[in-house]
Length: 398
Ligand code: C5P
Image (cartoon, rainbow, N blue to C red; front, side, top):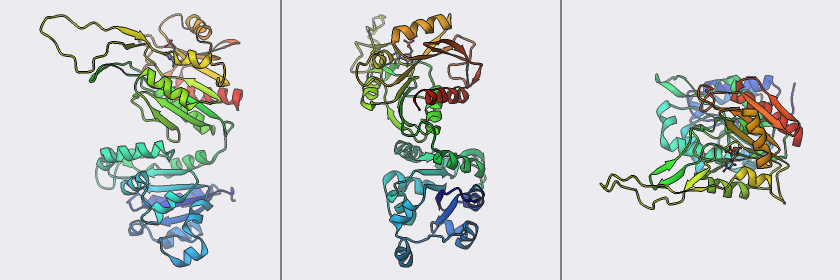
């Protein structure tokens, strides 16, 4: 039974291409129409005939196929689908996409499309970890390209590590998520995340232990509900969520600039662990011991309070402003006082005392403080906390 959605499935040349035939079957089972595109290298792994038979569709293979241009031009082909899926996405095709090449049918379709694109990378672990691939992935994420996988495991080349293409059910789930119109479709949400780094001199800085995991999970949950997300992140240790507009900053002052530049927004979630102070007398050159035995004295100056400033905006205040309170004692009392002091609508309070395992961990136990009072949530994975919070946000502004 058709669900009315069409997928243009670009199969690039890698050993994982054999899984793409199964992907065609599973997508069709879920009601998607599939039009396959095979690169010349992909044809070394799977045949156009099998792709065509499984998709019950014509297979597109060559940019200069004049018959195809007469039937359907490549521009039209790139836009007739609701979503472009690249599986497997090879290192080579990712590089072409990141740098805007349009040198063959696959890369031209990816350049010409006005539809969302989902990639399922697959390559040797060394190629996946190569700085060039990391850089290309970052560029693609910044362009709003969605991705699924790769996963860790044994590879056809005999090595073990990250690089295996995501399994077919995972790719199908990512396709469905990419095409679902959620309650936050058409809404813009700003999320701050990660720590800030405050320079002491050109090589040293003051930081904190925030990994950015909770902010990233919240942004991903908001994206899954259809929101457009501006993700302003300090130097976090987890990668930003695919599909967000990522704005990377280092200091609290840069974060403030980026946040105000990203307005207007329907909601703002300030999950960043912003440093309270910066070093006012940061050195322009690397500081050195002078042999006197005296340690340098830092003069600290207060950083802008982004959450408080956003909350008190007279014009252009986001309809809902959510802050976080990481507390080590009297969590509810301190967070309730913080909500009033900052002027935000909600505070998500959590206990980060030693032994709670929250900072840098995978779980979180939060209390949501609103105008109505305090609501304690059970201990949950950070992804689950994010999902519940995103649903609450959707109920309020969706
Ligand atoms: O004041 P405190 O750091 O405890 O408050 C935490 C909340 O305030 C978090 O939501 C954090 O993102 C935000 N905050 C901010 N700018 C600062 C300090 C904190 O936006 N300079």
